Length: 118
Image 1 (cartoon, rainbow, N blue to C red):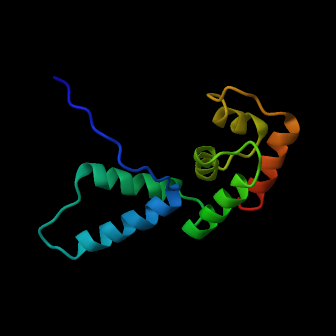
Image 2: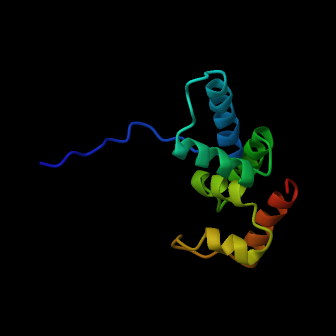
């Protein structure tokens, strides 16, 4: 007998959004004297504090702008917003698992959108 977990819902978040959510959790836990942060939670907070470059609103605006482009789907838009690639090589790494390759013009178009926010 195997037990499978059913995925009920999936929602993408940018690192900046996760930072805001985890900041709320951290503040809530700080008011409780006897509660310490679990190791996983502390590491997650450390991670988002280190890697969140934009604020949550800016990152969502970037995701929306990226999704307006033809070759950028939702998951890829969130990945790009988190990584903020600066050149074609970094952006190609995001598309490495896709079944298609982008032309230089398409890469530059995406990089121009990212450059407005970075």
